[in-house]
Amino acid sequence: TQALLERRADVLARDAAGQLALELAAEGGHADAVLALGRQLPLESCNAFAQVLLGLLLGKQPSGGASAVARAASKPTAKGAALRTAAIRGLPGAVLLLLDEGAGVDMPSPEG
Image 1 (tube, rainbow, N blue to C red):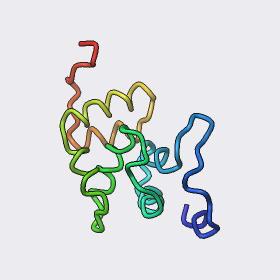
Image 2: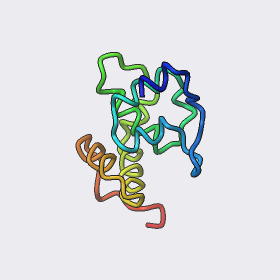
Image 3: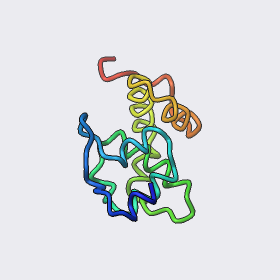
Image 4: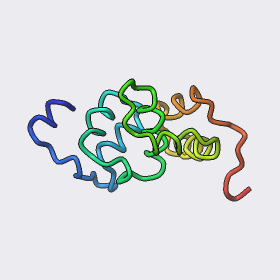
């Protein structure tokens, strides 16, 4: 990641599904990539699911860097919703991160 950033890779580029590299790194639980990309891009440009993961990943780092996002990520409802999304998308790294951070497995879905 760092090598690509040094070569001025476009951090705003999106994949075929419309996701940023920062979102993909967060969903995969890649803290080092999240830190490198997070310094280049406003976290608010990411989707809500990635913002929860980013808040958890960046909140563990000594540099912090995402206080508002970290506060939003600490809400039980946000963690539960993110856990449900991670499970539906089949993202084991994100599921493990969310479970480690206390995401509730018994939160009802929006449908009840």
